[in-house]
Length: 66
Ligand SMILES: [Zn+2]
Image (cartoon, rainbow, N blue to C red; front, side):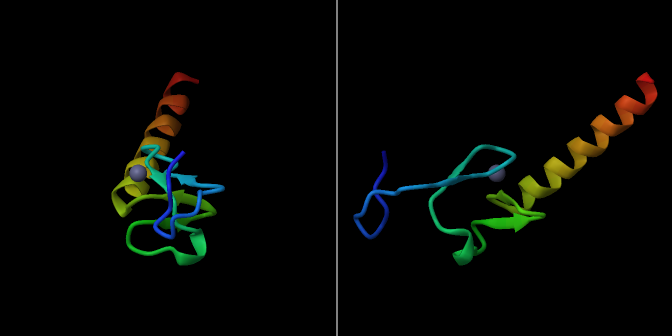
């Protein structure tokens, strides 16, 4: 369990959907360190791009395997 800056226990936290980095701020306060794309939370633009490229790769593999 980790403390939030306000010294209260963090009841809930969010995780980057790509790298799993824990994000303790609320989505409503999303700033440069937390990005929400299509309802999914990421820690950075880098992770959004990485995830998008992986999805494209998996789709391409699925097509070529079929
Ligand atoms: Zn990330």
